[in-house]
Picture (cartoon, rainbow, N blue to C red):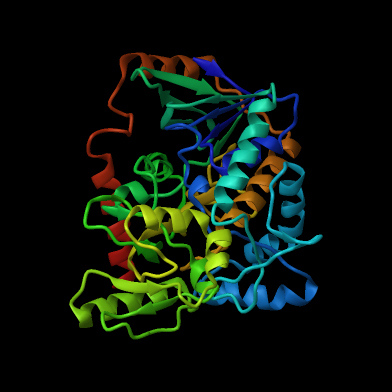
Length: 433
């Protein structure tokens, strides 16, 4: 048994930023299923959106709503946009190095954005942000991080959460008791054969929440990214950032002809690619970066340039094969504007949560910003909350007994992936009726 003042499950940007915004006198424990560096936050290439100035508000709001098919929660979109400058200031204070020209930021553009409003660090913005937050978290004496420790269940009684059951790398089960629990377990890419996500991200937050009747929302809203590097083998797909198309890259069919507007929302571009593949009878289409200056490619997209070169494609000369793959999860555990779930003392942030910002289809480069904004709001609410949350001795004994006996109530069983995949597909089918 372990105890903490606040327990955070997950070590991506959402979990780390929530921890960094909590009081220094609180004992904060972060558990993560793999190593900290194996979060999808590290994989984010393109950048992070920001409100450039007040004149950009209406355009930014409309771009987000339009990409989300107007199914977004307007309140959440408003909160995210208006909080963006504050978040960027926070990141800069932690040493995040965004591209600059002289004294000012350089902004890039991605699909479905009506203007450049995205800050970036080469083509590894997620790694730049997450690594700096992780460095700060590891420096703080009140934050403990346990890698290779997975949440297998929530400890809940009378719709109130007071901890989690976990499993360590040796396969031993144990309980962690905490007055506040924050779920930051990421997305669902591990449920799919072809995905840009790490394989261990299997929608754990959905599974444990369903077991305790905690409200979920839009679990069928799964985003496919239009451009990942094609490979005939199974496994995680290498993302070709939307920023590449924002800077001028074009999509080509088997005859080298452009067939769509590359800056439309992701779901529209994905549909166009799939239709073209069907027409051509091919397993992929082609992406050409020849409209982008060679030096700009090497400066702005060094990781993409290097990876493609290793796979036999020189993007300064060659077209590269691309195909859509599962990328992002817009649904998740329902939360309000303070990241509170329908269960007492339980919060959810990042891709595991659904606060309504993204609607049915996420606007490019809103994910890092949304995660950070609502992680900080979760921390603020926890700091201000004065409610009691101490389980009875009887309840503690009950859960300790269950853990000691390794009862079958633990969710991470052999058929877990198929169970979660079926739930998502079932929700999708119900919404099509």
